[in-house]
Length: 360
Image 1 (cartoon, one colour):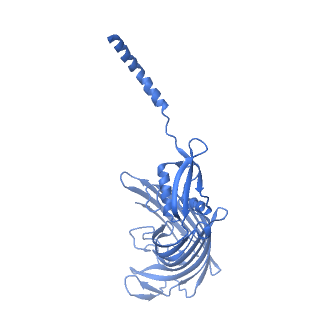
Image 2 (cartoon, rainbow, N blue to C red):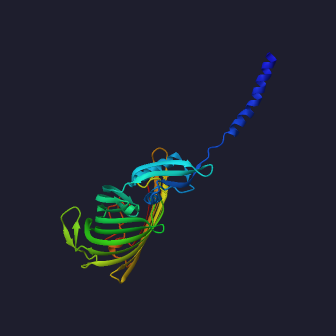
Image 3 (cartoon, rainbow, N blue to C red):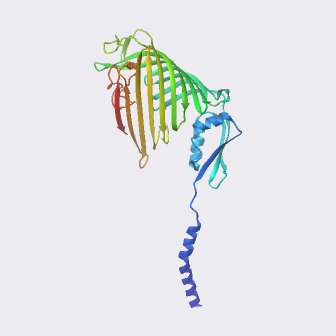
């Protein structure tokens, strides 16, 4: 009995590595699920157009529970849906899934307010506005209101109609704004108010994250004020010799191309990813004075241990000598070089070119 027991124990010990190896080999590695297609139930062209811009999941992408949760949050934050359910169904092949979206579009009108941010335009406050979702059952929106940015404020009206020309979106925008031009004289900050009215037609592909391109054609009129007003005081002085005196409305015909590649994990508070945006504008003042301006902005974000993030930014701009001063660039301040007073580095006529790099 003792010999049999010893032989049995030796047999188990001798077989255990093989058994362990066989068990490890029989356990398959987890396979990533791949998105095969997106199915809208019930079929709704308006929902399909909203998904194209906000879902940010394409056939061939890997599907994880985290990705589904983020997709649902993005769709809900768009403000387009009254009802929304997202789940997966079996695809046509192993490892492939179909993303099913069941929803009902909100086609009502809503009051809007709050902060917003555009990388090439900086921060703005939508003081009050109204938005009509999915007008004419085509997705998109129709909105108007009153907003204020760092150096501009006024009224706006926008109409976005998705997939108007093939896969291109149509955007019609109108603005009636007051631009505040910053001038430093003897260490005193002054402001020149410039009236700017415009209407623009845009055509392109716009996505919240990913590759976006938009071409614009606009017509506008500009009228600089005849005085400078002191920021911290009641002093008001005539236009100094450093600035050209313009006593009539100037008419601007402009064409603009906006390109961006956005791979940030979050638009406002990214923890990782990158962003690259460029803007090329060509203009004609009063039918005879042509000019060009180019702006580029690149950012990279790295996740550090704990809750820390490293952000690197490179920014550059150039404008031709014929560019009107109010179309040139402000240098210094929160837009590019923090720690310097607003426009303190660009001079009364603005910067015709600059380059800046920051690490935060």
